[in-house]
Image (cartoon, rainbow, N blue to C red; front, side, top):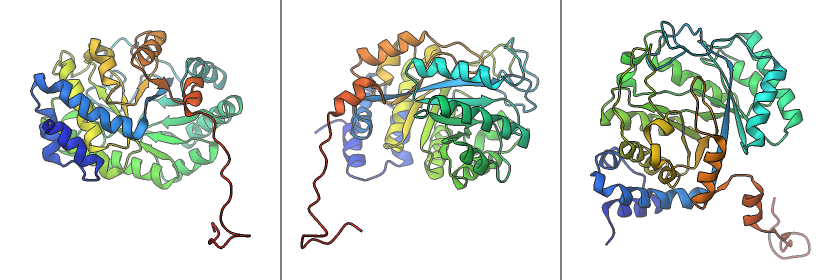
Length: 353
């Protein structure tokens, strides 16, 4: 008989969803059980995503000067973090930055701007950038992250060629008021729902290490499952000096692995992305985390630097993975012979209609 986590993986693969109690058990696993946890969660990862890793690249279109007071954010109102602060990039500069990520293997470009939410003029600006980007790189996915959406804005972004919209719930509803007071948890959920109704793939995740309990981490993850987010970025708090959560150190590499594994058990077929803070908190266990998660950001983040992009690509290769959409990925799929019609006209079999 396998470990309790192997049994959990068996159940999930058989179609029995993991419950809150299962998620708490993963978070509460003894450190000596971590390899068993990763092995079991890795079965789910392989079942749904094979040996591919989706590579994403962030472009910070507008940095700092945000009127919201999110305690974790270096761009927030009242933050004294010494970050880069600038207004909107030009379309030319945005394309240059995005092109760097695409040439490094990114299949999705995430266009991000600070602020409460976009004005209609901002939507026009982003639409122009997306049109130019898709003209130059027609196969790239574009995810926009512009803050709280107003009615009709998701539809306009979709019409412009945006594929997905990111708006993280960040933490559990029961913990949200401790983290930000200038908008509500309901505001965040409303924007994810607007994105879905507007035809955009919903991308929403969380930040671990905000002073939440295990129960609140589980609450947040099941909220994301309820929202049916297609991709779930899992961030780990980077306690910037000059923010209210400076000097908040609650995470260890093993704790981060358990959080990622919990996400995989609860949302086995969703894109689980190792996002901000992975270098700081996973450290030497980043390669092991790839056996649970199937997506990472390449290079730098919004206001912090990441490890060298070539080191990320080397890590992917060394662990037996390939970048989704790369030549290696396509070659591994092999040639696909045409399917000869054996139904419909000329046969006794019902047509495919």
